[in-house]
Image (cartoon, rainbow, N blue to C red):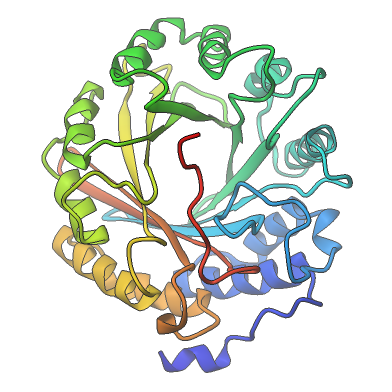
Length: 368
């Protein structure tokens, strides 16, 4: 990958904004998207905490990336086109969840004022996910999807285990009820058929958009389950095409068995247009513990994409803009890959860590 020579290394003395904006500009330029608009969005998402220096270790160990980096880039590939995305967790002024809540709410207000993000549905559940009493864990993560055509689209990820006054199960059920998806709980409960200890609810996602297609997502982390079993359970979705995900996971991880080194993740997506049944289900395959290097992951993803009829060249070009080291010299860039097939149309998304703190990140989210 000769182009790596032109990609500057991340310095501990650089700021988060300097790193993120320069990376986004390269990715958006490679994707043919609006660089000026995209970097303007990202600057707002990183204000004011992005002015801090990256340092050599995370002060606030973010839930965004396995090594604690608070910024993640990703790219979604489909026959309809390419979309570049960025996910951030606003760093708090103090190392506690209450301060993280304030930083997250400030960011939400900024996106609402600057770009017209719709926060009415978020306001309806804010007290659930950002409680005043004894909050714990992360507060909120924000994502922006940047397409070659159209304006940015925003979403948030909330913490079902925001404190011990309410279980993640009860909090998710109440949030669905408040948002008009009370009947969807039946599908959530059925999907977690082994029990919520093995199929653990871990995130609650909301599009910051209005309209019947605006999505509500429930995310699960699955312990001791085979991809084929999850594939079968995903038939609860209105549009899921079974029989693909087992092979997808095997080719990415090199294993036919349950993914034990790092648990699989999935989501169910609901919209007003879809009613109480999920309109889609997506599997997220963890990658950083299943191979010796990102070079192997690149080759596996390229092979899978070729079989799906998706643009391998576009993926590899973006990866060249993302990586700041030889791919053989670590295994922390690729964090997850997700896929789904609907109406015969495949979609694959790759998720990339900036490796600000570790190119060999350890396992996370083990049981217990």
